[in-house]
Length: 385
Ligand code: SOE
Image 1: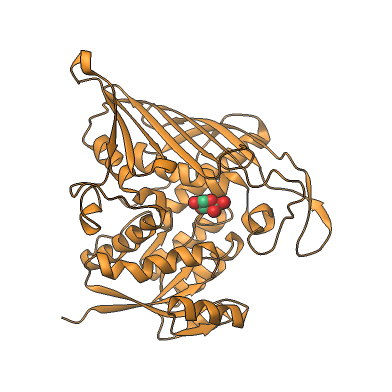
Image 2: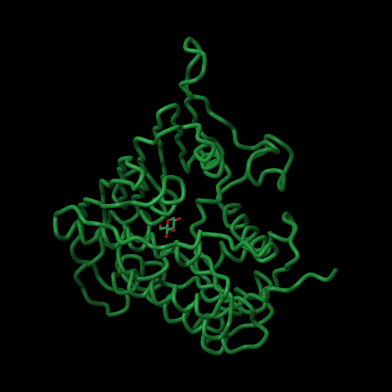
């Protein structure tokens, strides 16, 4: 039977445009689906760069205006891989045009925008998903399976860090290509929306909703030259953020993120301590899940390091022979595979826009708490389970 084509219109060709394109290109080689991805168009303002991207990745055509891309009849899915301040307008126009939408994280600049995006996809009835890719690392999925099987028992603690060190130099400008993450007008926030959002998404998935937060943020470098204006301007993003929280299940959370942890390039770690067992995961060793089970024979009890690479581990039977590991880019391939599986089965894959809104509510509460120096309640989403 002929496969149903999903003709992609990608907007943006930066780091994430490449990560998504790689996933689109690979998914059909490794995962079965009734649907087939077609790289139909890439859209970016610079026509020459967009054409070069199209040539390299195999996109059939180029657009320089995202509104024209959305208006095209030969596009089924809009993939948003542009700075955060453009997500809402594009997503709402795409929903109105009846397109499926994949949107880079965080979903929006703030919950108000995200709520409108959720309402737009709901009204249009279009499949939608947010690119929180770390949920798709096999070791993290194994952690989810162990938690859901009840093997940890009651959860007491959830700890997560996302540490980087690339903005320590005061000479680094803000704004413009690649550096828009330092400009609050384009990014919404700093490490909270960029890095902690990943930790929050995984936490909500593994450990359920967060009730309230108490946070602190710091902006270490107060002024930077702005690439677009050429002037030295105030820096309004948070360079570092740490917060405490209560999860709805009664467990305590501790989260930290910074771009000033010298020596750490992209260290995402999480640890969960339960009544019977604990788990740890580390992005720098992403195929391993550390597991401690108190039910083991007492004189042999120890942390085990599970090499998550066997055929019965999540996603792995679709890749190489047992024992051979996969990496960062595969989390994006898995996300597309799950999205297509959702279309095949009618059971939509997540995190969808409503899940993205839930993360944005936590991000917003964290930023408000840091500003007010007090415990702040997190608004809850009634997600369609
Ligand atoms: C920031 O440096 C960044 O690229 C994030 O924007 C990504 O979401 C994260 O996965 C890696 O770091």
